[in-house]
Amino acid sequence: MKSFQAVLFLALQFSLLYAQGPPINTDTPIMLGLSGRGVRTFVKIIYKGTLLENGDPVTDPDNRSATIVLVPVVIPVNLFSARSQIGLVLPFKFLSREGSGETSTKQGLGDLQLFFKYLLFQSDGRNETLRLAAKASVKLPLSTEQASLQLSSGSTDYAVSVVAGWIKHRTGIYLEGIYNINGKSREISYGNGLKYNLSFAYRLFPVIYDHYPMAQLNAYLELNGMTTFESSANGIIDENSGGTTLLLSPGIQYVGGAKWLLEASLQYPVLNNPNGRQLVSDWVLSLGTRILLF
Image 1 (cartoon, rainbow, N blue to C red):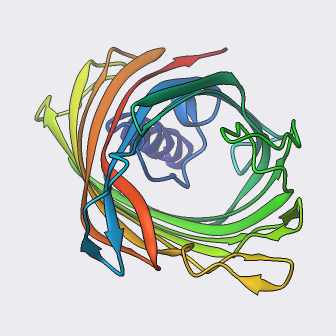
Image 2: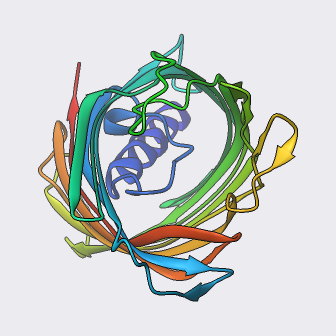
């Protein structure tokens, strides 16, 4: 009887993990199903059309704007168990810049990123789970080009992060903190950075997730922030680099069962505070999917 109860408890926990999909713009400590063996890809469009100087809008005589389109392919693989995961991220980039009546474009592969994630803590209750994971990643440049439009920074960068997730019934809360250790390229030393993400998730339907798999619709409201320190060139600090951005990111996600999902998110800056004079993001739109490999 006790063994039957244990199997039933594990089955309920397994179903709970699928009762809510992974956040759209925030990582998850859960490494099962679409979060563990699912190939992820999405189109992220970033539009920059506002020139700020020390946080205040200024008139741009060149009427500059920039559009960045990212199409990354993310492939995670569970390593030995559901507690550990390795993976790679390979993005395709399209860059377009306008200014002084001229338009320049460029497209190609961005930088390769490799990562390792490990589950540090797990506490499960009835229809509830709390988890904490650590993650380390490295970004490897695929190009060291010196052009006005660059697909790569040319530097080797590292990142360490922790991510926590709590799910109970239809509700989920996720927290993520990332510290970026950025490298040097072409005499430019890129400033390190800190990213911080908070995601609130709620399953809109079904009200009761009573069997697996079930189609579901999840709503997300996320805060995605980044603070970057100033870069320097030949030991001289670039006063027009670094700063803080905070994005409010509502999103929607449809999980079509065990093997695929569709998701969309619109990110809008509630805080844009760059150092010096910089062109900043007006909005970011993401449309994506995840498909289970095996």
